[in-house]
Length: 524
Ligand code: NAD
Image (cartoon, rainbow, N blue to C red; front, side):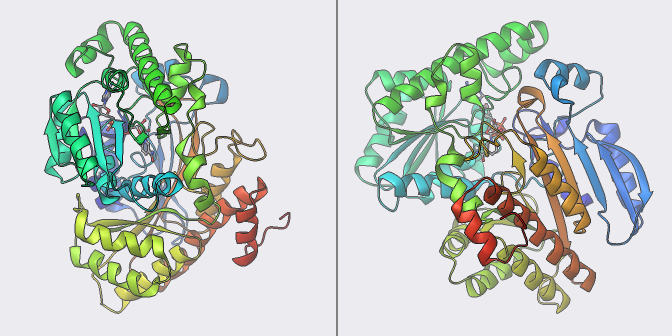
């Protein structure tokens, strides 16, 4: 757990402020809390559980050897109080913290943790309209931060051309240094020329352009250049800390954050409105346009773009059928730092899951193109049952000395069982149950009962306050038979309940999966 916490920060965007990703997603409430967590983890007994409240270690209790080592609740507020204003008021008093999905619960592994999800999303978009790949297709997007930084690489792995616009040159440089983006540019004309030439020649290319997404999107539309795909991953969910208004530098926005936050929020929302209007313009002229889960439609609507929700959400449009089978962003991390462990697991996957095209295709690409960040790790979109199978195989490999171990298994909250977010994962559910947040809470309770090693309940904080409820888990394979038991129970329960959630909402694929995977669900 300690290595995962440290790794979280090592991969973070602003580790000195404990900020991991998504503008304000933090790993611990403050540095005193961080050091107290480290001290406590070092002496935690096997039969004890550490309790974390919004990034602060509040207690240790004797539980039992199979109980979670760490349980957490991060950023949760009672319904009526769950607003950005109340959240920041409480955060400023040092009482709470937003943990994003994977920052507060120590699961973040950098852009490598999101890159397959972005790859699969682009691949789904390509399949829907353009055949098998993005060859000869042009993607325009914004935001090359912690998660958004995966977009250029995901685009070129699909054979396409990506123009990613980010207002902060340092963020683009970081993506270039880590091989997530190829070309750094400060000139729109040059960037467009390069992209359109590569599109015509059907060559894969990624360009990171320094600029404001609102300004650049509007200008590209004005010039009559219609990209094949348009999306965005600026931190638009947070108009105070995450989105820089047009005409302003990052530094100027930081000054206004302190001096006149209300004005900054207003200016940021106005710029988001400009960007979303351009996105609607692209939609009307034939581009595939989708929101990539940063709440930009909701913010733009607050600024008067009444039809912002004509833009669909990526989860409903592309990923939901996968969630109905329990397929989602499963990840594993080598705690010892041994790269060869990950490569051996790659080979095992290619052998043991040879009939799974999604994962074998991905593992082959990842081996060649995705650099490790921090502790060696891999993402693999495995389904219900497959995750348990891999966990048990890996635990056995550790037991037999074939790999070093330990290996931590985890997943994004963006998964079938992990989250209720009515403007994202659960938008337009068949039965209208978008905002029911019982499901991620049940998921966390069940994962505790199923003996996961870390279980966390999160809610949206900052700009996301009031927008979602989610849950995460970590299970560690260390080669013991006790780990076999924990892996088998927790990884099976986790996706199993997720599938039941979609079956309960009436999705035929999920109902079928409940039957074929023999999940006991009395009402389905
Ligand atoms: P981040 O804060 O690390 O990066 C955001 C980037 O946007 C920064 O590089 C910033 O400079 C840039 N930016 C801000 N305003 C801009 C503007 N007006 N024009 C151009 N660039 C601008 O955040 P992140 O971790 O990359 O996440 C981005 C968003 O995506 C968040 O809202 C997050 O919740 C969402 N997200 C989506 C998924 C998904 O699966 N789709 C996953 C994680 C996060």
